[in-house]
Length: 522
Image 1 (cartoon, rainbow, N blue to C red):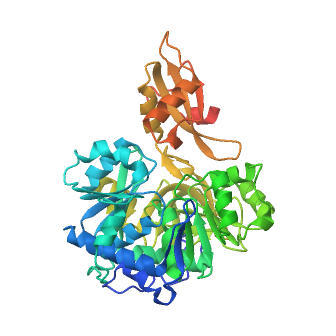
Image 2 (image 1 turned 180 degrees about the vertical axis):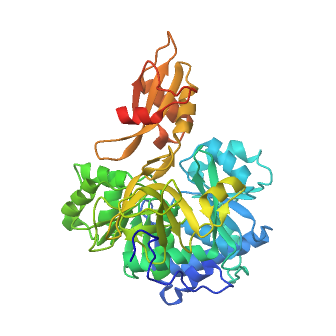
Image 3 (image 1 turned 90 degrees about the vertical axis):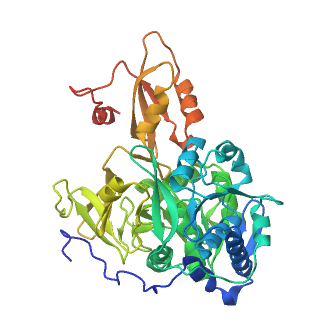
């Protein structure tokens, strides 16, 4: 293999999928012989759904949506916590040809307002706990005429909608290349981008990564700390287990170390999907259980580069490798990953068979071994486009190749090593954070004159936001004041972990802030 050119996989480029195809029907129809087996279980309430119950409820919801007048290709927003109702809604929409738009439940009312308007959603599925955030928005959204509440009973609830639908199986006449669902991806300005995925994409990720890399099988129990609204979590917690008939444990709340270890001890998952920040927190937990208390055979990490030391410590503690990999909202799941028995901590592994990778320099030419450039991907799960954003679509999806925005090098063995972002975007806990959005929030504080936000590695080597702040003359503010200010305006994970007060910011002759100087001095 000539590693100075594209890293071509040796497997077929894609899984054969018929032209007439419905993703939800495929995932549900596989389980006729395991109707009584548990498909999803809620780790908090203990509520569960068997594959038979899931299939019936998804078809009931699909028929209820038809009765409500929601036509194929209509978009609906799904802003729900991870409970068994989530797959019922997601799969039911797809069965009806309705396009679910999965929303990050950690966002703010401003973000939700933008996404509802941008997607032109005609219905909203929302968890009862999140309803107060949406209630002030609903009346002002054009075309949004229906709200269904999850986690409750009675009129207007998801459960009532399911009960109202016929159980007669009906599947929308969709094609493999029809739009199936959306996920929103943050852009360099912090404005979310509606990423449109096709019916064929879900099963492609399961067949190219879930089966051959994870080796997922029917007797596995899986738990993903990454939520279902993330591309990473959607594959982990829904597509992969459903593709083989495994059981998925769902946790509605945020995955604290105590809760995660509680799930791992009580439900004994064999596959655990995490992110580097969480692995570091789990290892630092003084109450973490012994290796013998868990049943893990496989762990994965994605969202940001896994520091080698964290991987080594986890393997030493639990006798289980972490398969560090990289995926994206645009590619739906992992396309570059370490393999069982061939893990090299500090790298992101090798190309997942079925995906072609290349590293391109600033001159547009492919890089040789050891040369840093932008990672680009070609594969069958690449998104169709960014909705209503032609310029960003053209910049990211370049013919057969999708630009990752990540800098990488490749060694002679085909292992890839992360080298940072191609822009100033930060990844915090696996979620993109725009430094400009944080800066804009800080600038609304009355004491702030100027600010620049950069990424800084913490003691575990994980990137967090740091703000360099110039105060107005005669004004005072503490670091805690500014942190609280950002938390009041943005999603919690976006606040700067460090505040440095400086007399001035380095700038070019034209007045542009030189962030690279701040990074170099950090």
